[in-house]
Image (cartoon, rainbow, N blue to C red):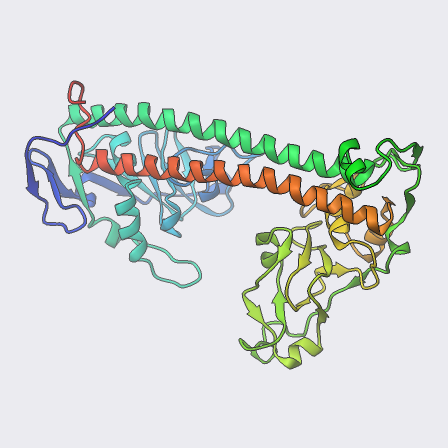
Length: 437
């Protein structure tokens, strides 16, 4: 459906607002909504608590917490009908229309609508221009915050009440359609990721599919034997079942101390310094990091040459990676110095998640060290078959990854359209009243 502009506009006097519908008012936010700063003791309150983590960015939706949520210390009291605005890292666009009384973190400003309806104020504050202006006002490098003195002086457009209702209804309807599409695409992505993991798990424990095995000159239907390991089950008869430490000792990285000393870093250093965040952000291959080590820092850590696989045992526990650059790893990683097989096979073995069964859940709950990693028993084909398996998985996972990337691009466009639609409606760039389409 195509939406037309209003018939008459006037200058707003605000550069980022431009022209606005002629019959709309312009007021300061502090004259359109009251700032409520009522403190309560969170420990003594039975009201539900809302933190920044419970508000979804850009949508205004409250994310249901896992388990009980409570507040320790002082909290802000809010009432049904209020609007909560996140002043910490405002670029995250954490804004929520309260549907019930509650308490919230002090990082949320409590605004009580006066000249505007709650839903219109929510949509207006989720306007990308408003978020951008507020974000530009923040102070503090590590924890950037905005303050009410600045936010309260922002201009707010005030359409007549019936138009506010029309805009709110329009945005509810149209963003609801977008959100439904987004949810479907997110579900599709999750299913593709599950399919990817299942493909890896099946291949590193059972070998290549028959057609692929024939192409590689391997037995397409090898006899199976019991591995004696619950998670592994039966494996091809010609595979060796043994602990990983029989293939290579497991060794831990090392960190220069104190790690925050500038003498250990040099932008021109030969070796990259690997942090947990670098590995979390990397895919199969580590190609870049944010820091490089000095010669001194390198001498006190564990250097790895390109083509080596290592494994995180802290932070993103259980995440494998193959380095494509010269790098040094700290003691939150383990590596395999004498692994002579196909590094990609070892990567896929850990990426499947199968070896961790019985050790705990992936993530921070999983407890890994050199002994637990070394004691993991798996099935190992010959180096040539390992390479054939890795080549097959490279091809097949690349197809799935390409499809996921395509869907994620579509998701990003839907989210951008959603934000643009809200901005256009609440600033009067389009007339969404019934009969104007």
